Image 1: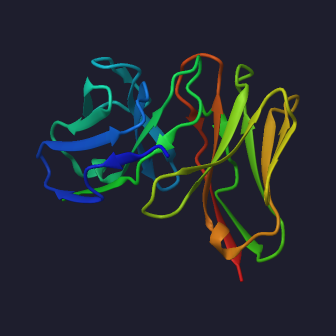
Image 2: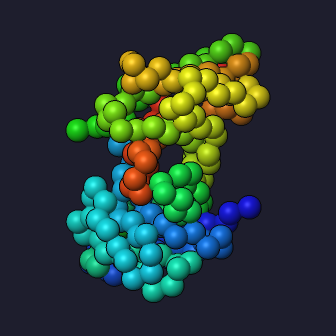
Image 3: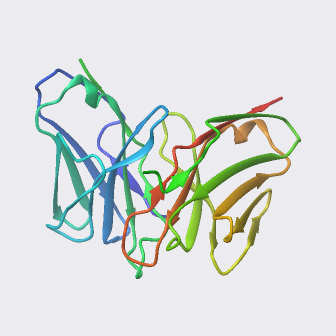
Length: 114
Length: 112
C-alpha cells in the first residue's frame, strides 16, 4: 500500500514564525502535491512537483514556498505565518504514467496560526 | 472559473436509501474522473473512478455514472450506511501530466 506521511497532525504557531510542513511518500512516486482544505472552498492546490528540485505553482502559491531535495520528500514552507494560513494542509503523491492518475493523500496537518 | 463543480454543499439521506452525489465539469479535455471520500481530520481516500470510454463503473455499493454529452457525473451509494457520512470530492483529469482538478465537495450525512 502507498503510504504518505506528514510530520505533524496538529501544529500551533505564532504569527510571523517560519513553518515547515514535511511530507514523505514510500512508493517512489514522481509527482507530489500540497493542498489546503478550508470549509466551503474544497481542496486548493498550493504547489506541486513532478521531479526532484522541480516545482510548479498551483492555484494559491502566495505566502508559501516548497522544497524537493529528494524524490520521496516534499516540504511546504510558510516563510512568515499569518492567521489566514490557519487551515488543514494535505500532501499527496502519484505516479506519472502519461497522466497524473490517482493521487494518494497523507493524513493532513491541522495548522493553527495565532 | 471552476472547471469541476459540485453544486450541493450538503446532502442528508436516510440509512438504507440511495445517496446520489452530482458533479459537473466544463473542460472537454477531461477524460478520467475520480471520487474521493474524506472523514474529518483525515486525508481523502480514493473511492472509485471512471474513464470517458465508459458510462458506468460499479464497485460494491458504489456506482459512478458518466454522461459525456452533458458533462455530468454522479456517484450512487446503495444502500447508504451511517459510515458513509463524509465529504465527497469529485476530481477530473486530462491526458496531460497536470494535477487533478477537484470540486469543492459535498458533505453527506446518512441518518440512522
